[in-house]
Length: 118
Image (cartoon, rainbow, N blue to C red; front, side, top):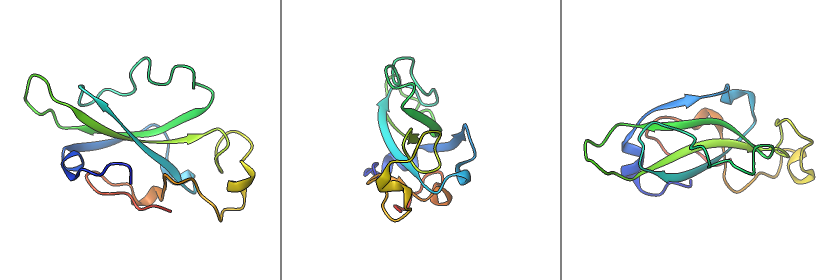
């Protein structure tokens, strides 16, 4: 899993799904740092990659109550060439036997819990 500090997981309040995650055989899990507990994505985050990444969902945190607080937000996405995505699958992933290093099982994605790698 990309998030290694359990305190970040404990601060999660909910997961916002932009699409049904169970439609896909796997999702890539990533994380990024932000000062905002619930807003995603930032305007510039995906700039230059609009046609390469599809965001499927993201975690929302409970506000920390401090003026400035750093949040590490998990998010789930696909790349154009992932199996089940909108583009032609990469030959390595088409068979269903090889997966990206950050691939997780969609049904294992839960608030405040570590996702299971494929």
